[in-house]
Image (cartoon, rainbow, N blue to C red):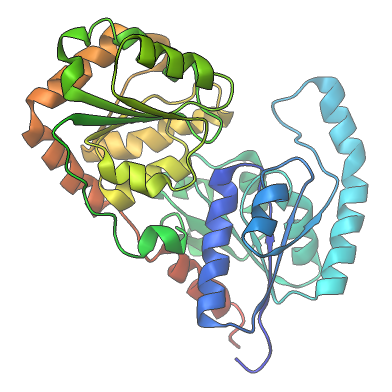
Length: 363
């Protein structure tokens, strides 16, 4: 392109939102090394630490969620909006983006809307099967909407929608993780980057029912900070072969070792399962906004590569029963693995970038 590409990635808050934006940013830099990139988020989201670590510039605006909080906090958030729009306008005038791409989360709202009002090309990425509040609003104004799941398409005007899949960082695409064979049946337990207390406790509760086969098991467990010491102690006490971590950065390597994954169903986790072809037991977080983790999970359940245990029905006995079932039915695991791989969209970041840049082409 004759003029330099300048893209603002607006939003963040959670890893599910943020990493899809980083994936597109990586693809942009790979194809157009001279492109200029700016992330805009808040002081409170994961972007505050992750964006600088990834080598990108971050600026923050003062904005808070309007949904899912008390009336007092919502009123305070509304009072902040004029300032957030002024800050957004200043950032846009200074950076002069050619495109603004909203990546989800409440920080994406003021920046993306301001860009649209200033005549800049805009688009959003919706990572979940049930769109978030901010994206349901932004979808009425932006030029294009990129979806991870076709289940979300009904919320947007058809001519704006592109079902691309959820963009994945280069580290997940380079050198597909090889299956690391082990004599033990290997289970990977994770509840997202912060862990999941209910999942942790249920897994510990399952050990009583797995005692007779414990010498055949290996457990990989990301607990989050709060439950780390307790979970590690119980595995050691019960003489279970387990590797326990507060947080796992190189999560791809642990997926590669797993025969079965037991996890929440955030957008990032769902994408990782399909990219690496992993059969899973999904336990949707019941308090996720608009119950979007349930809808995410149903994409995999309907396809036949995962099953759901609802949070209120999650017990140690139930988990143990399912683990024993899959240990005794390796053919079922193999079938589900193959189905999961068919759902993968490894070109999502490239497709989002291409369709975004097409907005700059003269009509």
